[in-house]
Image (cartoon, rainbow, N blue to C red; front, top):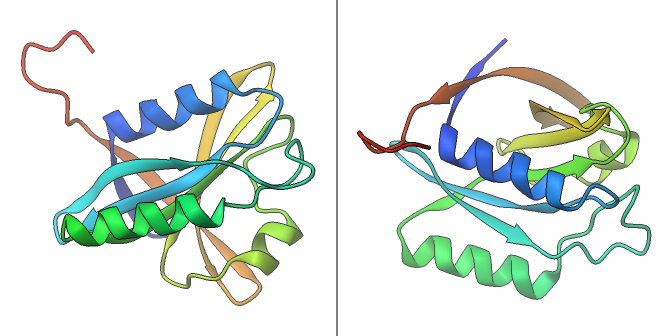
Length: 144
């Protein structure tokens, strides 16, 4: 199983976004460069059934990718939440995955509102779970 290091600040942001919208799936992109993951780009979910599906707003997705390129970064991960189911890729998640090699993160609030996040690499119709470790990126002396 591969290991991925995510900055604590990004993980905290993802968990907070999911908790702020417990009735619908949140979604977005995360950038990376050669040193690792850099920035979270929340994108509006434009799916018809936001409780069970996500669809990135095309305009928001284009703006996020443009911003990444301007910063010398690239797409590193796609994230979304499952309001009331485990953080496992659904058949729809696997079928709609269009970026091989990009980390796929799912945040779940299914356990009585306690967030849980898992990561996957999806190749074809196979989803392999990755181990997520936290990279402490909080500034020294910060109370975060």
